[in-house]
Image: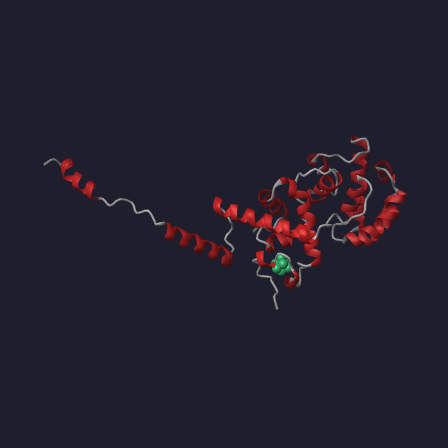
Length: 262
Ligand code: SF4
């Protein structure tokens, strides 16, 4: 008998690959979900992503029902005013900014007027918002570019906005979304950052990465309003130190370790 012929019976006896029955697959899927909820394994498989997407949309709908009037809390009448107010809102509150802007916008009405302002006067007007020197400098620098390169109009393109001093993606997204209705991204401020993690929308900590995850999870037509809803919920209920989980409209959908139910 040739060596080849000797091997053939072994090949015939090899056992066919066992396919796990449906029940086992189901149990494995349940175990994986349990593991995810306990250990926060990031969602990677397409099936899990689909589940997360459905959950995210449910949360969006609930927040919409809970906060039908949620909107940008900064007072403004024109894109330039919103840009200036958003620069001022860094490390400050919208409430404080709204106490400063009426006098500021009365004094300076155009980008050219802001650009030609005496810096100490500008600093004095925005003093109470904190970091007033940097903010005044940014506002003046941004307005100079707007006056000289954009005929006094705040640009509507993300790349052009990002060239302005004091403007990063958060500010650019506020201007594009709120003033122009353009969904180019999601505003990630401190509230959105905290809630995106608590609600398991992301495992990232950097705002740009969180924004990317939110953009993948939510449809584009929800990007602008999503940040309004999360900011509103973060201020009203899901506060940083002690979230008011007993009053939370999405408590049953929240798996956060920060939950306070007593
Ligand atoms: S249950 Fe608590 S932690 Fe979760 S979203 Fe609601 S308020 Fe925030």
